[in-house]
Length: 486
Image (cartoon, rainbow, N blue to C red):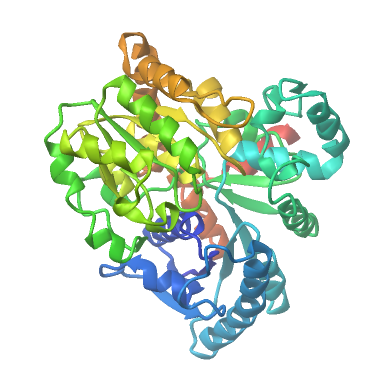
């Protein structure tokens, strides 16, 4: 039986998709050891793990969590130092216990894990938790197109950029880490190291959290890399309405937020606006006020997730934002909670729209739930994800920021009216169409399900599952290579 060791950075945006992929591997007949930090493990909501999944932890020096003002570069350096030692020690221990690791799978920006695996003669594969489109943008940027991209950026936000295999892009649709004026531009160096690491392989394979039907051109936009679509990631319980809380992030906030379901139950179908900006984005107070005013002017009930670390003072904070929130809560038209089970909310019949930062996990979960998105992207891959939502899938709309980067209340209302009003039938219909395609991809026999099974069989050295013609099932990357040879 194949034994995969999964390593993920300790942020929820990395942990949650890696955990969902772990379940896909188990469903395909493998067993998985999941390695993460003590802090991340403590924050998981734990039910009984599925058979075949075990956890291992290590300390990165932040067992009680990093400070909100902690330096990101330092956090990643500590994770790298302690994580590489823990990974090597764990692999040796498992080998001594006659449970050797078949393959190490690591999430993006942990490229040092590949070096540890190689030093112990173990195959390794990158799990890219962003879309194939973003993978292709980074790949081209680090393989000869950096000058073209930078020159186009210098011409202005509306300047068109054409990269091989991708639709025309503008600078506002590129990942923020490759834009010189953006925050955390040092992250570009980490991504460069990631791709330099892949270049050391003769023909690297990359597992991508997407599905063939969602990004067919982007998956083929990079020569020399086998991109294997294994997503979108969401738990199998999503299909049958069972408890969705297995091993997801939330901790104590989960226990204090459960009344949102009763509140949603009280609302008519497709009327509630769900608002969430993920686990890292911290909105300035003036932006929260603009969003709130847009919600109030749209006259629609809303459920808004605001983390305590984002809010700072909480409901006792005497600000314009919180005063209006209190008024709406008294009218029972608005609700703010510190955390929720997002798939549970998106699957609720009362929810009709998602105001989102367009993190890839949120984007694919909304897609799989058939909920249109109003995109308010902030940084990293979110701007590119919004491009997919608005222009490729046509399952939502991207709000336009003003000259200071703020999404004003009138623009928020315009987008809500466009998506949820009488003129939004096409967007809502497209959202339901993509819902079916995304779910079909991960169901038994779907494109992503077949890719995962073929990958597992390949790692065990077996011939792999057979297709309807009796031929060995190939991953999508292998199929493309065969077509090219023809």
